[in-house]
Structure formats: C-alpha cells, structure tokens
Length: 388
Image (cartoon, rainbow, N blue to C red; front, side, top):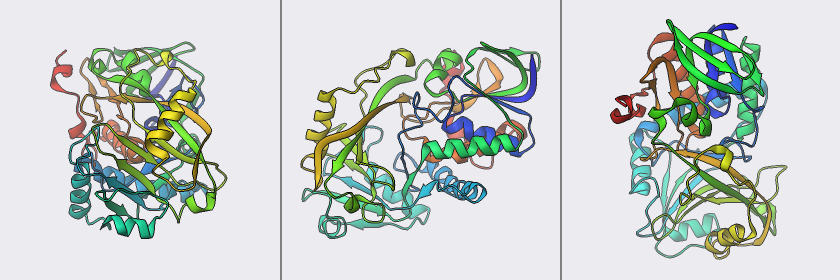
C-alpha cells in the first residue's frame, strides 16, 4: 500500500497540469496512467492544438485561456522548450453558419474579445484575401482575427509538465491501470492492477476512461471518435507559421465546421479536421484507429478541395482521438456526489487543451486550499447527476 496526499488518475492534458501544480505546492502526489504519456491513445495528441483567448463557447472560459498562456510561458522558461506559438487565429463564418457547440459563435467571440480587451480585428472577405491568400472565401463570409492566438504542442506540454512534476517530488506511475476508486475513512482509496493507494484526495482526469471510473455522475457524457488529417501542400512555406494562422471555419449549414493549423517546423502537411458526433462509442476500447480512404476523401472534398490554394488530395497521415462530450459541450469540474474526496475533472468536450494549464493550477488550489482564484463553479456537475 502507498500513502500520499493526492492521487491524480490520468496524466494527459489536465492530469499532467494538476500533478505539476500540486507538487509545486508541496503536496505528496502520485500520478497514475494506464499508458505512458504523452501517448496517442486519448485526447491529448496530434502535434498541435489551437489556443485562443476570446472564447466563443462562453466568456467564463476566457480567464482560463489567458492564465494558461501565462503558465505555458513560465514552463517554457523553466524547461527551454517551445510550447506556445502565437501565429494568429482566424474565425471564418458564412452567413447562417452555426457552430456545433454554440449558436452565435462569431458574435460571442467578438463580444469576449471586447469585454476582456483582447486585441482583435473584424475583417471583410477582401481583407482576408489580401492578408491570407491561401484561403478561398465565399463573398458572404465574415472573419475575426486574433493576433495573439496560435497553437500549443500538446505532447511537449504534457512531457514538460510531467518532467517538472517529477522534479518537484511527484511520483509518476505509468503503465498502471486504476480498477476502482472508493471513499476510505476521511480520504479515498484507489486500487490499481499493481498497488493500493490511500490518499486524502484524488483527482480523476482520465479523459475517455473517466465515465467508466466515475459511474453515474458522468453517465450523461458521450464518447466520440475524431479524425485528424495532414494534406500535402505544394509549397509548405506558404503555410508556415507567420504566413498562415490557425483557423476555425463555420461553413453554411448546421454542423459544417472545420479547423486547421499552419505547418510547424519539422512537420509535413496542412493539418485539417472536422468534428463528428454521429457515432457514439460505449467504451474507449471500441475505437477504430484505422482511418479509411473514404473518410479522407470526404474531408478533402468537403473542406479542402475548393477552400485552400496549393493543397493536394494526398493525405500524408491521419490519426484518431477522442472527444468526451457533455450534452452542452461544457466542462465538468466538480466533487463526485458520492465521494466528496474525489474531484472529477472531465469532460473537456473537445476544447479543453487550451485551458488545461490553468485548470491544473485551479484544481491544485481547490484540492489543497478549498477554493481557487479562477472560478470553477460554472463547470459543476448538473444537479440531476449530483442527486443520482
């Protein structure tokens, strides 16, 4: 048996951040992951993740994104790793376009930028054509540009935080699977396939595996397979950071949505993806990791062929990842209703990585101090689940 202050279950985006922040505050931390993070089995991989400060999903996310940017810079200074690249971010929206997660996404983004004094521009189609001729626009598409937006390297972020967590005293146990979590006296008991842990508190940040470990309180979460594609560019320099931004493109028609990235140094291909919620997985083990030619062709025909100049139909690689999705696409950060010593940090609903460094800090404050400087109350579990 191992005794500690806090057990962190899952060491991806949220768990690596929480483990670091807890260890930095002097807690005796054990972090557990069934794989060896960073890895390609969950939701926190794929080379790049969009980050932006004006959040169209809701203004309550903005302070988290802004603080996360500060923390990434702090970690860069501590490790010498480049984690955050500010290459600018573009939101494009056709007239009548609806974001799958939120109505009026463009209006919400602009309103958030104005409220929090985030530098931005609202561009007409001709402005976008002059500045970013790589895009093939329709005449009715408006644009929001945020110069401070960009991308983070998720694998680097996770590795850097785990390395610093270890240096701060955290014990990290990988290749170890949690089998049960239960109240134990004044704390929590975590059993794995290798050991038993007794702790004052536990943090459940296992992504796609969280609903299976949390039980009823996360029963309303759904699990979805997503596909990332890297298409060949005839001239990769045209799509390099500094010449091409990250983007979110809301096309005409509900659920017609794509997003993408510039080609970072050392990489190949323009990374473009959509969001697919048609098929629900009952367990993470059900995911099909093979991406079919038909899937690739559908993305190219619908979101690439007549949208970007100099990008071919050749897909250099394709990968899958998970969305663990709440019905309202919000986060869930709350004490487990049947085990007040277990803090649930899931789901990320497909837009969590940009906030993860700040959430890790807020989680550490809440676990150790009882409250956090950044407000997490908006991400409480729905009352129906707390009463279940």
